[in-house]
Image 1: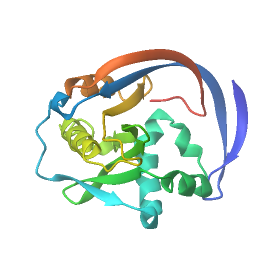
Image 2 (image 1 turned 60 degrees about the vertical axis):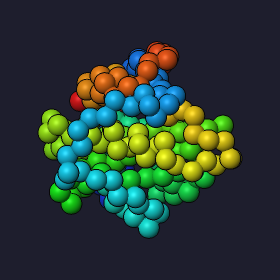
Image 3 (image 1 turned 120 degrees about the vertical axis):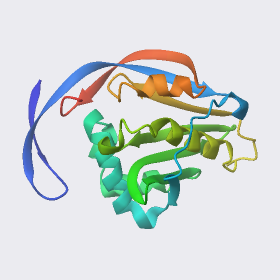
Amino acid sequence: MDLLCVYHRSGMRASVYRMILTDFVSYLEMTSPDQLRPAVVDRALRLRSVGMDELPLVRKVHDVVAGPHDWESLRWSEQRWREHLGRPGVHTWIAEFGGAPAGLAQLQVQPGGDVETEFFGLMPEFIGRGIGGGLLTLVTRAAWGLPSVDGTPIQRVWQRTSVYDHPNALPGYLARGYRLYRTEARQREFTSLPR
């Protein structure tokens, strides 16, 4: 374990420990919209498409969702975020519950008809309220309806989840009809212990 001195984008200095841990990553896919086993979607839950002009909100919600799991994207610079969101085929939504930000979803349409779920999650105060399955249902439906980037119809929606993500992540994906197609162990750097 190494002690590092880092600076938050607010300018505050903090000391953190850097750890290398083994992460077990599960890759899941859905190859037809008919495979979706939809959850009940609460009427107060909706997806709102956001663009580059709302980058501060995207980052704020992302950081709240990602913080407990120490996602690598927490350490991205403003420029890295702009490059990421500016890629072809990237679609970002803020999940809103009763009009308040509740989570984040980001998909990327890839050549060949694949859609990758790059970010998906709820803010901690919305976890355990029975809306995660509904949110995944909305995001999966949105993925199947996205336009192609190369003329190839959407053929597959896929994502990965880590053992350091929320413990309901993998069971939630499986419950909605995603199929596990690969697992791998890899080394991952953390700057805080994932919760």
